[in-house]
Image (cartoon, rainbow, N blue to C red; front, side):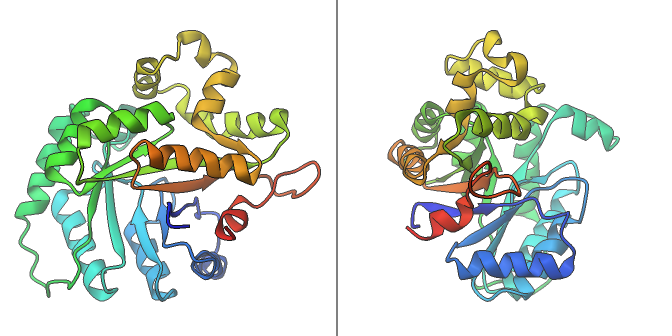
Length: 289
C-alpha cells in the first residue's frame, strides 16, 4: 500500500450520501488519498470540502484543477482554506488541460509552460488574509513533456502524469531530479480476459485518443500512428493500462516505482458485473496486500 498514493475516481454520478459512503470506504480500506478530476459536474473545491468534512484522515487531491477554470488567486485561497480547516489534508493538483477545453470555456489558449509558470508565480505572490495552515497544501502540476517537467521541478512540489508508459516515468524522474514528487496515475483493470480488459481500456481511453498532446508524448516512447488506430493497438493499450491478475497489476505499479515514481495513483477500470464475465474490484484487491 505504501507505493499507492490513492484512488482517482469520477464521482459526479453519486448523490451526496453515496459520495460520502464512497469516500469513507476508500478511507476504511487504508488508502491515503482520494483524487478528484475537474470535469463538467460539481465544483472541484466544494466537493473536496464535502469529502474532507465526512472523513477523518483521508487526503483529497485535485487531479487536476484546470487553470482556465479559475484565476490563480481563487485557487490559492481555496487551497489555503482547505489546508487550514482540514489539518493539511488537501493537495492542489493543477494543469492546463487541452485547447478544446479552454476554448469551450471562452478562453484563449496560451502556451502551457508560459500559462502555468505565470499561474504558479501568481499563487506564490497571493496575499490571502486568513490564518496560515500548519501544513500547506502541496502543489503538483500535470506535466508530461520535458519543459513542463522542468517547470514542476523548479516551481512546484512535483508532477502528476497520466496515461504514460513506464519509460516515461524513468524519463520524468531524470528531468525532475531527486527531490520533487512524481505521482503516476495508472489505469488498472483486474481482469484476466484480454478481450474484455482491452475493451474496457479502449473505452476509458477513447476521449484521449484524439488529443495531439498525448500523441506527441506516446510517439516519443516508440508508438506510431498505427498504434492510434481502432481505439488503440494492443501494444499501446498494454503499455498504458495495467490489467490482468492482481499480481500483474502490482508488478506494473512496482515498475513505475522502480523507475522513479514517488507514488502510483490507481484509476480503476471495471464493469458493474463482477466475477466470471466481468471484472474484479481492483480497489478492494489492492488494499488487501
